[in-house]
Length: 200
Ligand code: HEC
Ligand code: HEC
View 1 (cartoon, rainbow, N blue to C red):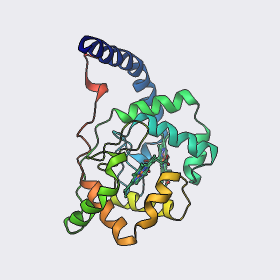
View 2: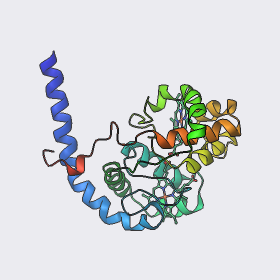
View 3: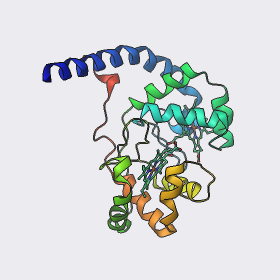
View 4: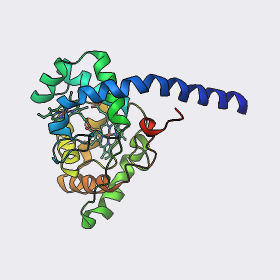
């Protein structure tokens, strides 16, 4: 049984490793379209532009598709995603997911409150904000971007049946505190950097 699990895990990494080597370089080449706003390596310097470095690949693809279909609204991202094919989205997502995220510092005064409110979030986004697969990684995200998205969910400007319900019970202070707490969660914990690991 353990042997079988071992073989499955190793095959997963071999497959994923080969698949991503080509995709990472394709994605890197394409990422010059994105660098002005999301940073050269996906660590954005603008607090309302999300960091993409270390973000889960599956989640990045889902959001690019949501912008392209108009399900998620943002005029810039709607235009940009309209020019991307599915393969380009996968390549970009693979590239960004393997870039090392920076560690951001938050406002210490808000952290304690944010930590308490985060008890509403960890079941989906993970103890450390790492978010499995199709769920977004929150750890290390700019607090202003996180607050903006929580408000977007609250106003039903951004639609997700789960998040629209969760934020209903948060007030502005809760959102500020959560944004600060989430920004300081270590984004490198649980982060797999396939790009720099030559064994894969
Ligand atoms: C002119 C600035 C600009 C450019 C260029 C740009 N983006 Fe964005 N992007 C944004 C902004 C602003 C948002 C936040 C939208 C919102 O508030 O919902 C965003 C959001 C995103 C998101 C959602 C992230 C999340 O955490 O939900 C993804 C994924 C993304 N961009 C990928 C890309 C990719 C890939 C490119 C290049 C092909 C790109 N962007 C180019 C400004 C830009
Ligand atoms: C039951 C599962 C679940 C719970 C609990 C949950 N979330 Fe989410 N969250 C999601 C999903 C799924 C998405 C992706 C939505 C989409 O595709 O637009 C998301 C998206 C987000 C985003 C947008 C991220 C980005 O990069 O744009 C933020 C911010 C967020 N959640 C914060 C929170 C906070 C804070 C809490 C607790 C107060 C919380 N979530 C609780 C499932 C959950």
